[in-house]
Structure formats: structure tokens, C-alpha cells
Image (tube, rainbow, N blue to C red; front, side, top):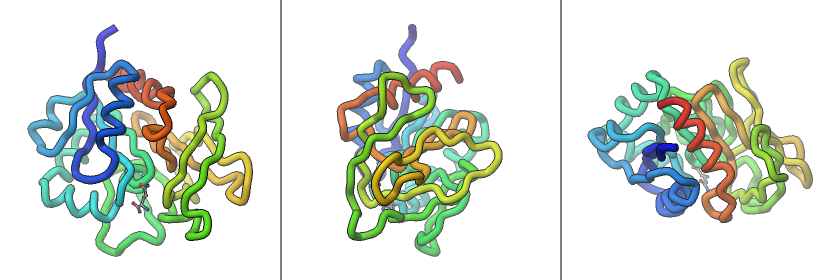
Length: 201
Ligand code: GLN
């Protein structure tokens, strides 16, 4: 099986962790900072970090239009945490000037889990991923408040005060999680995304 080439948007955030997770999942990973680099990849990951900063740097590095265009052309994209926010069609509690990509029809609330429980861990079962729940790590994470008709809910929080909240979704080739699989050593989600990219080549 050929290894897909997957870029990690390398403007800000946990780029190295995603790159390592992709390599462990059998993909060729490369950091992306320029439009010419974007042209060389079959899929893209938008890492966790700070969505307002990623939004600003996307414009500065002249990547907005090229990424929007690749998404419109069907390139698979996976966003974790801040990356989920960047893929949402609507953001609540965002900054007025932050802008995402032409992405998933969903409303996400930024920093939704609140200050008291700004970071927590919880098991999350994901549709399409075998082997039991993922140990999901949430860090000032968003949750999904509403999804459009074309969006598949892949996972919700199963226990604790946030039980029932949607934290993983997919709309065709776009995948987003509120949590950070790149930080836990569980490579199943990256392998799932690598399969999605392979199928789209
Ligand atoms: N709160 C951050 C944001 O608004 C996301 C946090 C994260 O990616 N861990 O972008």
C-alpha cells in the first residue's frame, strides 16, 4: 500500500506531535507553510493551538485561498481542537476577526468546557474506529453545538459534566475532533485519516 503524503499546517500549534503521529500511522508527513508546499500533499491536518492565531497567520502566509480551493476540490482535511474551530462554518465565542476555511456545516463553541474544567480527559467511542474508546484529551477545547444535515457525528463525551457533547464529526472528506489524539500515543485516529486520504487519491 502506498503511503499518502499528508501536510500539517505549520503556522502555530502542535505541529511536531501531528507529524510524528502521522509517521507512526504509515503516512509521509510534511509541515506546510507555503502555497507551493500545499500543492505537494494529498491531505492536510490543522493542528491544535490557538485558532485566532492560526487564522491570522493563514492570511499572512497567503494560504487561505489555496486551502479553501483544495477543500472545495475534495482534499481530505483533519482538524483537532483549534483545527476543529478552523473547519467550522460557524464559531460561537470566537474573536470577531477570526475566520475559518470553507468547511464543515457545524456551529462550534470556542473554549466551551469552561475555565474550571479547561483541561480534562475522558473516554470517547468513535464510530468507524475499532478497539474500544479513545482516551481523549481536551485542552481549552471547543464542542459542537449544532451540525448540518450532511454532517456525521462520530463521537460524544460519555461521562462527566460534559456527557452528551459532540466532540468528533465528519462531513465527507473533512474530519474534526475537539480533542488531541496527537498527544496521547494512540494512533488510531491518524490511521483512520490516512485511510481517508488514501481513498481520495
Ligand atoms: N482554545 C483554543 C482556540 O480557541 C483551542 C485550544 C486547543 O487547540 N488546544 O483555538
